Amino acid sequence: MATIRVPEVVPSPPEDSEKLMKAFEGLGTDEKAIIRVLGQRNASQRKKIKETFQQIYKKSLIDCLDSELSGDFGRAVILWAYDPSERDARLANKALKSRRKNITELQVLVEIACASSPHHLAAVRQAYCALFERSLEEDIISNVSLPVQKVLVRLVSSYRYDKEAVDSSIANMEAVILHDAIRTKNLDDDDLVWILSIRNIFQLRATFQCYKDNYGKSIDEVQLFITVFDNSLSLCFVLILSTWKILFTGH
Image (cartoon, rainbow, N blue to C red; front, side):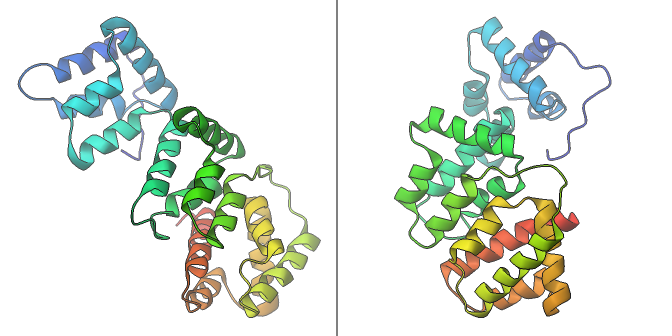
C-alpha cells in the first residue's frame, strides 16, 4: 500500500462510499474491494471519501473498518484511511505509550521529525494535541528519559527551512562540531543536537560531505563508530543518521 496508483478517471466520493459499504455487507468482508478504493486514492481523496461516507450512512468509515477488519492488515488499512498528520500523530503516541519503549520503538518519532516537511510536522503536532489533549513534547518528556528525551524534543519541535540553500562555510564549521562531539563521545552536546534538529537535508548533506572530505569518514563509518558507544543515546543518533542517509541517497 506504499505505492499509490490513482486511476485516470477517479470515481466520485459517493461512488467510492457505496463500494466500501457493499464491501462491508454480507457474510464476509471484501478486502480486495477496500484495497481497490482506499489503496488507489491519495490523501485528499480519502479524506473526501470519509466525509461522504459519514454523510450518507451516518457511520464513521474508521469504525466500520475497525469492526470489519482484523490483524496487521486491519491496522494497516485503518492507518491508511487516516489523514497523514493524524496517522503520524497516532503512530507517535503508540510508540510513546509502548511498554517496551526502547529506541527501536521510538524510531517512528525520528522518522516523522526528520523525513517530514516542516508543514507536515507542524500538522502532526497540532493533530497530536487535538487527539490526546497533550502536546507531543509533553508526552516525550513524560515517557522518555534523558538524554534521549532532549534529542527527541528538539527534533519534533524544529521547523526546518525546506528550500535548497546551502552555506559551505557553515557546513565546514558544523562538520568540526560533529567531529569533536563524536571524538569526545559527547553526543548530547547542545550544538550537535541543534545542528541535527534544525538543519534541513540540503545543509546536512553538505555538512556530512565536508566531514568526509576533512576527516575521511562517510556517514556509514560515523554510524558504525557511534554504535560501539553502546548506550541509548548512541543508538538514537544511529537512527537519526540512518534516516538522514536514506533521505540523502534514496536507499
